Length: 115
Image 1 (cartoon, rainbow, N blue to C red):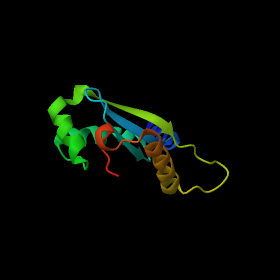
Image 2 (image 1 turned 90 degrees about the vertical axis):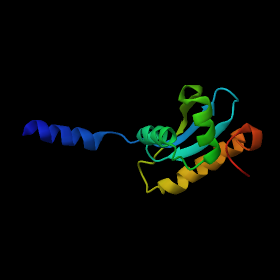
Image 3 (image 1 turned 90 degrees about the horizontal axis):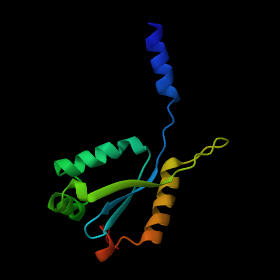
């Protein structure tokens, strides 16, 4: 029974990190930039692509066309959480996303976003 309590406590102490990630097509260099409150959900993103249910249809089409081995998914920035004050995580993630969209310009032939 003590082991169960220990595991619960360990789970509660796991640090959840969110931020910005980029999916890159290694064949044509196109990128998809997005945010997540928890990087552990990137497995879910892979699953949606592999099952054909991703919301970005162009990315989805090319995922099937080129195959999953021709894509990389990488974290580009971790959201820094404030320990002293309240932080609107959704708002801060949106700001980070806008910064990276501006920086990488993943539009048209460069990426999977539309203006």
